[in-house]
Image 1 (cartoon, rainbow, N blue to C red):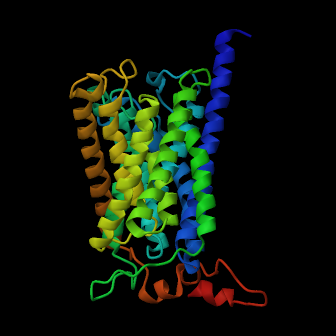
Image 2: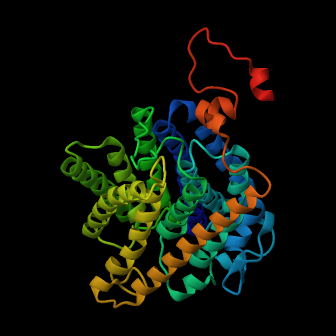
Image 3: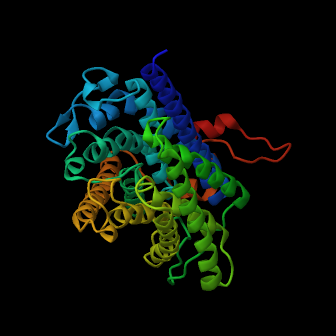
Length: 425
């Protein structure tokens, strides 16, 4: 066997394996969000994750991948590759187009899952299905084309986003913010007297296991983005990923001990995730020391952003915007500051590269944030003209598990339900 064939085989195995790791992160999202919400809404979380995977894969296969990676049309959108047909030779990959689609499909599923947590406990299931289709078939693919596809206008300007702090996390985070604001807070979340009422997580151990699964899957997320099993940068990418996540978690523990006089478990969980989000754009381009700093800043700012949202009466049950929107923004800009010479076309500002890279990163971040927020708001507004976006008051009070799906997440022995009646209602 020639080296080229062996290398292609190794690359294929590597990309499929890391794609599977990213897909496993959906189990992490499911457990994390189910643990953060109340018991009466755990099934609704799981059902949304199934929507993300099933509808997301089908829509991305039929149209999303083409709009994202098809032959460029004016730097704005792809024009070939619908149903994985047509001309895709411009991608110049060492792996098959099918293999590349699988990896990118795992990414698009992760994007919509970010929004899922922000709308927990109050979005109507049918409205969520429609939004998931729009996100995976239009919003994310077009933004991804700008940043990652050959010919995309931000890519041509020199924007760098190795594994998606902007294209995935900032986009998903700002979309989550728009969704949370549009839907409004859960009943009783904020009192009429201005008081903030805490909604205790139903199962923190479950949420912690979900975070650990996400943590594990992130090594596929970042290291897999090399698309090559023989790339010597894989080890460094894994190290920066680990250091940033550890730093984000550790700083959240210390910061909440000082701020609240107690180490806050949900903040520690989200601190680790914030560090992971923050390093995703620059994991291949920054030093170990910079990775620690990026993770630390992401973790601390995430806590402050969560408090700011509460003061603004924005209800984000799992902290999707603070973790993904804010940390994704930090990570995107950090590349413009800390990119080591030789890893990108322009080095970071702190390495003598000037303002060029930082300026492009800031522009790209602003565009992605406005695109994700604006298109999400417009999508919900359009859905509302035909179907309710939010569940009724009675359905919210009884819980979406029984009110929408007709079955509770947890039942006691000898408990019985009139399933026919629940499904008819």
